[in-house]
Amino acid sequence: MKIIDLTHTISENMPVYPGTEGPKLRVSNTYEQHGFKETLLTMYSHTGTHMDAPAHLFSHRPTLDSYSVEQFLGKALVVDCSSLGDGDKITMDFINEKKANDAEFLLFYTGWDKKWGSESYFGDYPYITEEVADYLIKTKKKGVGLDVIGIDPISDFNLTIHKKLFAENDIVVIENLTRLGEIGEELFTFFALPIKFQEADGAPVRAIAILD
Image (tube, rainbow, N blue to C red; front, side, top):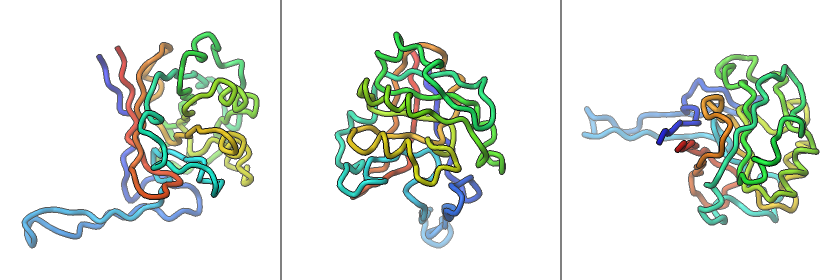
């Protein structure tokens, strides 16, 4: 068995969505003064490797804390889109439907995580088309993930793909994944467990792949 951590580390100088304030990690209690260390974390719910709930965009739709924990784990497949360039579209041509139909999560590997920490991370990354979103809906996937900052292109302020997925479907979106290129082409066990807080529109996750 091999376990791969698919999660970026949260730090004060990490990339965050343009216009969002970065996280703060303030040491509130110290070994010297209090006999233990404790850190006050201040960050937005969509920081780092994180999960979006339908309630991110629609007030009447489910929050993460309302889902059973089974929503956040299952069989997954990595779709290799690393041949794509800036702003290219991820189409159905990249998806092996015979394998993908058996997966509960589809994770799209673009290789964009190599840009993590640089200005170019916020550039024109590859993104999925509405046709791919329709496939995710039709096959009732639990979730979809990518190694980029958003499932919609950075220029789409309407968040078209988010809205298509979240309007009527109990699906989650995991963004800012990393190391997807180390997993391979076969099905594997995927965990993406969000912080459980009340009325969670989104939350940081610890995402891992378990390979047999």
